[in-house]
Every structure is written in C-alpha cells, then in structure tokens.
Image (tube, rainbow over all chains, first blue to last red; front, side, top):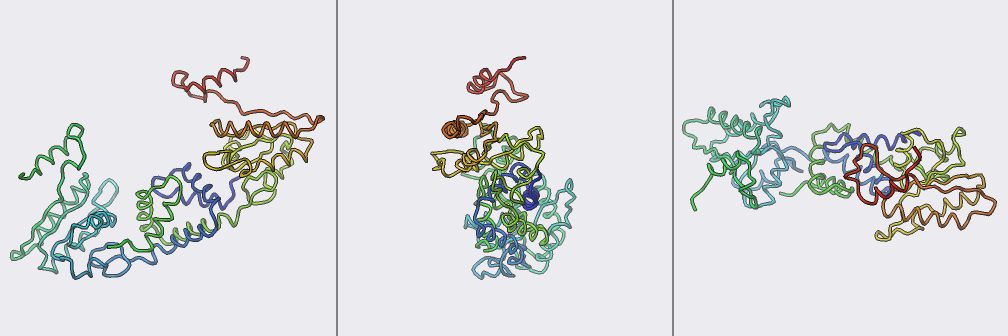
Length: 204
Length: 204
C-alpha cells in the first residue's frame, strides 16, 4: 500500500520546516485529517498571504504591514538611538518589554562564515548608509546575540562604523549587557558568562 | 509595535497543531518568511487538498485514494484475516514491514474514557458488522497499542466478538505479541513488559 499522494505532499511540506523530522511530519499530517476543511482552508490562506501582506521596512528592515514600519514612522520614538538586532523576532522581544523607545535596525542574520554568510549577505551596508546620511544619530546599541557569530558580527560592525564616522559626529557605540540571566545559578554558569558578568559589573 | 496580522494568523495556525507551542510556531512562521512564494503556495495547496483527495475505505476505514482501498481491493491478499489497529499510520507501519498479507480494520482511536472516547466514537461496530456479514473470516488480530487504553480496547472488542460469533463460525481472536523489543536491555525493561515477555515466551 502506498501513502496517498495528497498525504505524502503535506508530509513533505512539513518535513522541509526546520526542526520537524519525518515522524513529526507524519503525525501532524494525520492529525490534520481529522480537522474540519474550513480550518485547513484558513491555514492554507495564512500561508499564501504570509509574504503578500507583509513588507520589509526600507528604513530599519523589520517586517511590518507598512513601509516605513510603525516604529520608524512613530514620531514619539527617539530616532537618534538605533538598536541593531539579528532578527525581526528580536524586535518583538524588545518591544514586548516596552522599555526601549529608540529605533531599530534588523540585520536579518549574522556573519557566519561556516554557513557562507558574509557581511554582504546581511543588512550591514544599509546600517552604515543610515549612519552616514544622518548626523543626528547619537547611539548605536549592538544587540546581536551573545554567541560566537553574534559577537563577531558586533565587532565587525563596530569597526566599520568607526571608519565612517566623521570627526564632528558624536556617536556612541554600545554592546548589549552580558552576564548572568535573572534566576541563574553562579555555580552552574559557564566560564565565559562568568567572565562577562565580572567585566560587566556595575556600581551598587 | 504589533505583529502584522498575516504573521499572527500563521503563528496561530501552527499553534493549533499538537506538540507545537508558541515559540516553535513563531520560529516556523519567521522561517517561512524567507522561503520563496512558490513553496508557500505549494504548502497551502497540499493543506487544501489533504482531505479533498483522500477518502476513508468503506470496508476497513483506512485512508486512501479510492474506495475500497488498494489493500481491500487486492485479490492477492487474504481477506480471512483482519488486523485491527488504532490509526491509519499503524497500517503504514505494518505494510512497510511487508510480511503481513491479510486485511485491516482501522478503529481511528481507542477507548479512552478520560478523554471522553467511548466504544461508539471509534469504528468498533463496523468491525462487528463486518464479522457478522462474513462467515469466511478466520482470524482477528487485535493490534491496538500495548498501552492501558489499547489493552482495554482490545479486551472490549474481544468480548464483543465473542458475543456475536455463531456456533458454526470458527473464529480465532489473537493479540499482537508483547514483550521485549529488539535491542532492549532486560535490566532496564519495566515490570509489566517483563511480565508480558515471560507470559508470551515461545518454544526455542
């Protein structure tokens, strides 16, 4: 007995997603066989419209419904501070917190030579362009992830910005704080985190 | 900043799937933003057609492309043996093995009172009807899972079949073998499995 083509197609579509193996793909597909057609149609519609109804902001490159995005066009926000992150999800995480009122710049990745991603594959040049054209920018917060690739990306961007900044332009470049996360246990923290935590200590 | 509606819709669709939480749903959705529209359309198409292009076999209730399914309409197979399983995926697992040449009966679930699934919610009555109408059936293999619910379902079906079998009808009812799986370690096997393995021992 062969698996019906319609089922096989959906299993293969699920398998192509990251972190979903053949067994999970099968399980999800057979689960969906018991779901009303209306819900399947709604799911299909959401997939089809995903990219049609979203757009990259031409200023900060986050994903939104308009261009410029709701953050870049918000006059209440301080556009003299730019927080540089790897992914649109990072913007959502920071926005959920709600304490940050500056602008963003989404790189859509990080420099990762092992996966053939160089500085030109992500939106670094666009960030530099933004700094060059806007002398009002006061601070760049490098908020790439504290991973090896994220640190290397932050370092590279720092170097590039240093090169283009004009003498008169007062521009501060900062790195997001690294140390022990809330609820962590000193005993179980890895060496590098501990070292960063000591380096990043602040006055009490 | 609010998540764009198109993204929110897809996240919610993924969240409704079993075993997929909010974080995974977000991750999958943002991954799909980087996938070509053609692939999204193909995924959507597979979802829409899933139920339209498949049908329940009216004999054994497995999911296939025709009715009766390719197994039930195969004259080479021995329709006097019926293997009763919980899910269509179980049929696929047994068919992949390729050693079994009888027919199937898919219950589409098991008796599970804690989840409000009684004998009438699954295809038990249809199995009994099949046995009543076909005096040629020689063996029923109860291959529900060796879980508490699967055992209870097997026990219930066994009792029901006993009640309807005519005096003249020579019908054997068997339960799929339970014991240690290949590659297992006696030391780490649980008590019930060990007990079943002892009960199910065969002559060497």
